[in-house]
Length: 479
Image 1 (cartoon, helix red, strand yellow):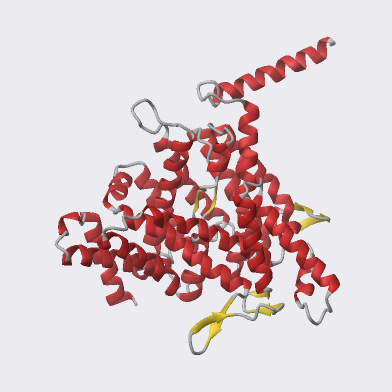
Image 2 (tube, rainbow, N blue to C red; image 1 turned 90 degrees about the vertical axis):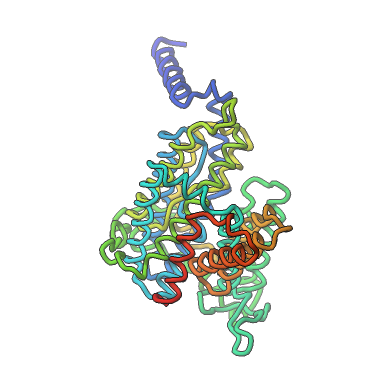
């Protein structure tokens, strides 16, 4: 080896040593190779958000190409922040469920502009940051009963599942019964774009089977297989039978992107300009929006806390006394990410439970998170791939994620009606009223009244009393 090669090797070794020292790899019993593989694993398991978030939020009128960039950038910056500041192996991205609440409840049902909705997200993020640097966060987590926390996750899952079923065309409107099952032989265009109910359900089944068999990248592979089957059908069946063919074959690059070649496009960040820092914060200062801000805040707090504590347990981040190391920093990073995401035009950016996938293969430090963040940044170049995926193929993943979230109900105390009834009321009302905010409100009111009526008033915390009063006032004066 000549002198120049030897010097380069020395520099490389020093650089690797600095990386190892910064992320404290030796004290966490891990290596650079393990952390990089863990980052790749987590990214693959949560990369579906790059496709799902733009599809859902574009229903508000926001541009798909800008949303795709925003999703990748928001996830990249937030996850790298988590890695560098908190040194935790956690990936962050726009929250599933929160993006649906943003689109279908705040903008769709309530009629607010997406700019005002982003303003509400910003305000909830600021409150989250303030709570994370004070004892308010601990008070909130301690004052809300576990049954209602579990119900929020499950309810968001049920809400997402219903949206997925509607997007695929499996569930349709019915004059007599409100909803009904669709004609499974239908292949065409519906209320939300291209529909193929049978193929949408097939996507869900394929993803579920692959996940059960622990296939690496099960979600992405399931979407890809469904897309391939759809393409084959367009070639084998008459065009008048499979109308989706026209949508599936329209892979034109978005106007905000330059240079197009197959599945890759070089992003032009001008595509972000229509949504970058367009939040109408002043417009969000309305009494009627308080329940919306509270909903964004609640779902974000409890989802984040549950995810981070779960990842900490799997990654063995507790000290000898059982205290979770760096939890405060990780919560602060997550809360700051919510505000950052608003700037790019995203719903609250939050920690993803899929981070457990990377932890399961050895991820223990922030180097895993930095790897995830860099891969999201690379994902910006794959807009054409996002455009070429039929909606029904991606919607199968939405139904799959919903099923995962519903599993939180297994931790309920099924022997105490005053615990499980409010939880089920929360989850069911989220889907049936098509509003996460309404579901949470019904859950708190049900919990308080049942505890009062059964002589268990002492179990009602001050926080629950206050929130129940707020939600009753909402139904009396703001509906």
